[in-house]
Structure formats: structure tokens, C-alpha cells
Amino acid sequence: MSAKKNIAVIMGGYSSEKEISIKSGNVVVTHLDKEKYAIFPAYILPDTWFCKLENKEYPIDKSDFSITIDQQKIHFDCIFNAIHGDPGENGRILAYFDLLHLKYTSAPFYQMALTFNKRDTLSVVKEYGIPTAKSVYLNKGDEIDLDFIIKKLGLPCFVKANCAGSSYGVSKVYKKENLHKAMDYSFTESNEILIESFLDGKEVSVGVHDFNGKIEVLPMTEIVSENDFFDYEAKYLGKSQEITPARITEKEKATLTKIATKIYKVLGMQGMTRSDFILVDGIPHFIEMNTVPGLSEASIIPQQALQAGYSLQEFFGLAIESALKNRKK
Image 1: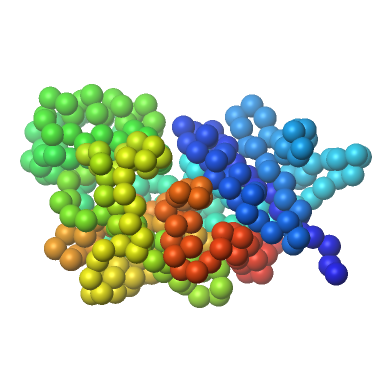
Image 2: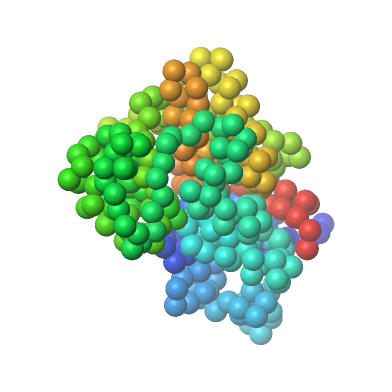
């Protein structure tokens, strides 16, 4: 029997999503097949990188992303990317892995960097005829014309940090006098913000993966938030209903399947992604893509995978097997 593959599950990161990422990473560690893989939880934190095994920390050698246990150097066959935000979801650490010729789950660094930037992602998909909300983009320090923003987008509108996830830095604004406060909040998460028109419709989240050699759209999830929108509380503190499969018509499902697949291809994705849409009069409007979606048992992608008939062991294992097989060193 062949030796087990060494798999590092990277988690943590440098952003506000650090704790959420650690939860996701530990779910992956729990569910991966221990008979098939030697699994190493790898914490990527601003001041330290280490693997944690049986409550002991082993520093990661950044020159080759290895660890040493009992004077034996351990290299990794594949990296499972469970870092939400910087540096996993924005591609920075993946460029480093490319330089080291290491294989990893998720798309390559450029595609990850592109999709982490909401404005740039929308700019690309619009060129392919994908409906989106109207938007205004601002850099920190730009002159702000509130009347222009309201005339273009209307009220209410959404103010978002351009490069952040988990609904950090997002506000729904109803009154002109509250716009500046919302912008200041978004600028705490990113030096760039995106202001979008409100789309009145049904929110549907669509998981897509390509683990078995072809692109598969998972059963879709309808999101019904108890709060004013799908904010941090709704996502992580139980203030929402996530209904899988979504209560949509067969025609809406077919349209979403076609558009989600098109976006996945257009953006050069690999591995698992989750794209959010608002259905307005049956027409899906693309909001954003998550390329390292939440992976806790209660998260949307695991819900969809289970609905599709995968166990989490199978689902996470397919991500690794796909990376091992298809990604060039």
C-alpha cells in the first residue's frame, strides 16, 4: 500500500476573517480521510506560521514550506486552502506556493486576486452580459459627491469594502445623511469601497466545483435573513434561514445554473466556489463570488454538498485529489 499523502490545511490569515477561517480549517481537518492522508493543521498568522499536532507547535520553514519533527523534515504533497481573506482568498500565499512548486486547492493566484476585488470581478462579468447591480467605486481620499451617488444608485443602497469578506465593512443605507458614516466603516476594512444599488428580489447562493473533471453546480441555497440583509449576524450567528434546495422555479434554476457555470469559466476558477445572486423578476443579478467559502458544518457549501449526496469526507477529499491530479508543479 502506498504511503499517505501529506496534506497541510492552511487556516487563519491576516484579516478580520481569521477566526472564521480557523473554524473552517478545523472542520476540514476533522472530516478528511485519516486512512488516506497525513493531515497537518497549518496556522498562517501575522506573527507566526506553524503546524499544530497534539497541542505542540512546529514552526513552518518559509524557505520551502516544510516542518521538522524529531529531526525529520516533512514536505507537503498538497495544501488545502481554508484561509478566507488575506493571504489565502486574495491569492498572495498561492503565488508563494507556485514559486515553491507546491500543489493546492482553489484557483491560481491571479484568478483569486481578481475575484477578491469586487469591482474588478464585476467589470469582467459585465463584459459577458451578466446582469449586476449599478455601482460607484471610490478610493480612500477621493472627493465624494453624495448627490451624484444617490442620483445614479438611488436609496436604499449598499456600501461595501471592496476587498473583504464575511460581510465585514458592509452597510445598507436608507438616508443621504448616513452615507458618510457607512463609507467610513467600509474604509476600516479596505482602502477601496463599492457602493451598489439595492436589488429587490430573492437571494440565492450557488456552489460550483470541478472536482470530478467536469463542472458541477451544487443544489442551490435560498437565503432569508432575519436582519435587513445577509450580514455577519445572519451568516454566522443564526439570524437567517438557509433553505437548500432553494424555493425557485425550474426555469430560474436552469438560468442560474447556466450563468453560474459561465461565470466560473469566465473567471478561470478551479475547486469550490460560491456565487451570490439576487433574482429580480426571474433574472439573476450577480453580486459576488467567494473562492474560499465557509466550510463549517453549518456553512452553505457543506449544506449543498450534503444535499448533492456527498459526505464531507468525500467532498473535501475530491478537492485534494483534483489538485493532486490536475495542477502542474
